[in-house]
Length: 208
Image 1 (cartoon, rainbow, N blue to C red):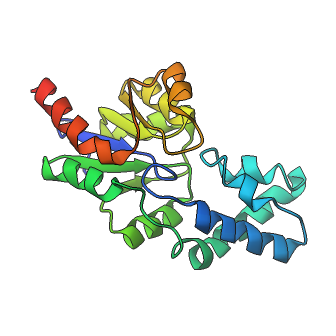
Image 2 (image 1 turned 60 degrees about the horizontal axis):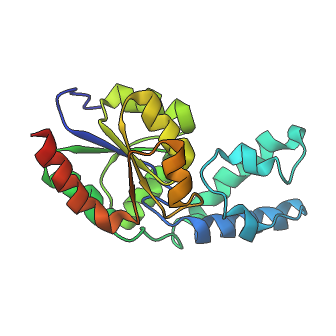
Image 3 (image 1 turned 90 degrees about the vertical axis):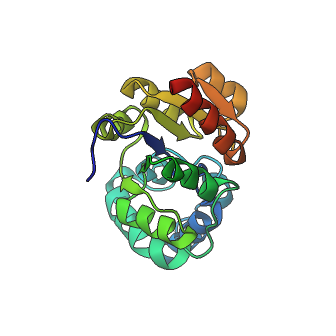
């Protein structure tokens, strides 16, 4: 891992920030429902992406089953979730803007890290990855990498950025609207990542 503290480092969330994982995750839940015989409202589940998988599974399974069902979900994931999942609008260009400036992009996500890597490879995004971190726990990786900015779509991402002392840049492309993101303490709210390169150029100019 390149953890040079002097290098410009921008952190990104994954689900609903860099990728629209709803189609893929919906497919996994539907397969899981078939295998377990337990009803899962997959359309509802994908409206509240962000928190760890176990929190969603708790809506459908008793506590004693969550660990095993979660393992099965992660096993099913590569075959069902990667191919249907596209990059979000502007995501590839946003990460490319960071790299073109000589910076480093780090994806910090609550997702199982090997599956996060598969997603990034599928959509052609080159970034380092830290998985299984949610909300304030994301600060662990952001501090480790020396990230000055963290970009996410959820109020949990805002909390993680603030705990790390990073600038919170929010995109209103996930389950949390712009007003909710601002109320949570986001420093910047963008409509989506198509606005990121221009914002990033201004941020670099101001820092210089």
